[in-house]
Image (cartoon, rainbow, N blue to C red; front, side, top):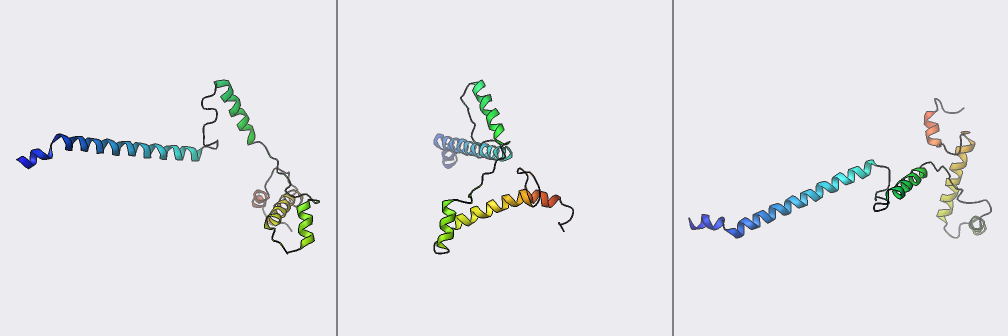
Length: 138
């Protein structure tokens, strides 16, 4: 009997309650993180609440201006024809490696082909246009 009563001593009961509450808190934190993670994944807005402690009018103004960002359709030209970096690349040949300049030229060429080859407005996407075509161009 002495060993059975020792198992139910006050210290062991307190430790079991402490471990149980610790497991409960950790599970609660984990479940809350997962819920917030999936909620943020499905939302298109910023991942941090913007204007959280701001007054209601200011918060609404921030939301209105952030919603306008999605309507911006401007794609700048990365390299101008007379860009100094481009002229330096042509003058030196392949002595130095300027991979980023070639990538910039490729992106500008793709953007130009969107407008010229498909006769589409500057805001459309050439891949989306090509998928919608019934047949390849002749």
